[in-house]
Image (tube, rainbow over all chains, first blue to last red; front, side, top):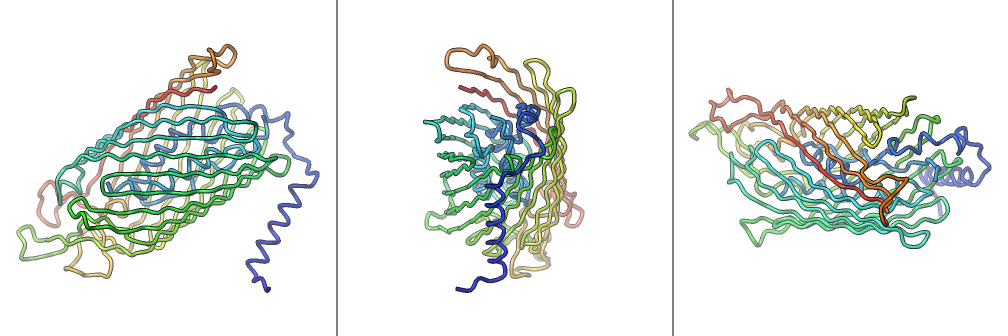
Length: 78
Length: 380
């Protein structure tokens, strides 16, 4: 089975990310230095029910959509 | 209510991504009871939204949301080509997050119903913490099946299939700053125009110099959006947030969105202010008036796909009446929240024909809307 150029790139990226995830990576912001990022005022989506509503209003009034999700928030400060 | 149909996948997906805000940690157990009001441009919409989230065991969290829009519309479209109407849209969703190590998998189902429009959305996302939990990568996919009806023709039924692909990266940059980059591609296929809306064209034989014909949209649309957001912790405990988004689609709509927000806690209170600016070009088949009937293959006069600029100023306040240290029975923390937003939209190529001015002398349309949200939040 031949994999095209895009497929090879995606496969390589996945392997690289997977390997990086398993390695002993030294974070430049240590877990004990994340107290400010753990403050509720720093949440990327403080109130999901409220932000979903306002998103709904904008998408009804404007032509654009997407690109505004608060995907992830790797604070690691639990 | 056709205005609200395209929103639905995105709102659903937002709830899902909100659920996976921390990949290595399940979302907090929380309930929100919200009342929302939108009033502007002849349209008044209000209703409740209730969200309940509860963790079961160590690795599962369930979320449910019930949402209602009660719509009373006498918008510029409605008063110029139809009659004012009342409508209700009901939406509910169920979702589940599963945490395993540094990975969170989420599934979500959303159903929306109104008298002439039904939509169902299924979505799935995976979030992975990596690089010492400094980075979170999220991949998401949503599939939506919509059914478009027409209240004046019970036999009218058209389908729309919509797929959404999302990739998001959230990155801790310094001990004071976090940023996220999100990319979304959405494809639509099916009946994308509004069965009620008309376009106008020059007609010297008509009394006002123009007549109407039904709009006709392409059957497909693909859009791409990339958004960058950064939030910074200020030294005196306050937060500053900036956001930019670029959007483009196969209808030639191109838009820029920029916003800046400031959050300031004071004891049990948290105050915030946000300013948002949005600007878009019009779709290639949009015209305020066409030179003749059936002048182009596709035609639309929906003001939402016309060139426009909008500005929003939002002020919000929150009061914590049950605090983290004491709690009350099973409730650890509770807040009451209120916000007011003033949305103003200037349309650059959409004439206000409701005033009855002569053809060619009609003023451009603009609207201002008041948006109010009041809600209680409980953590347990």
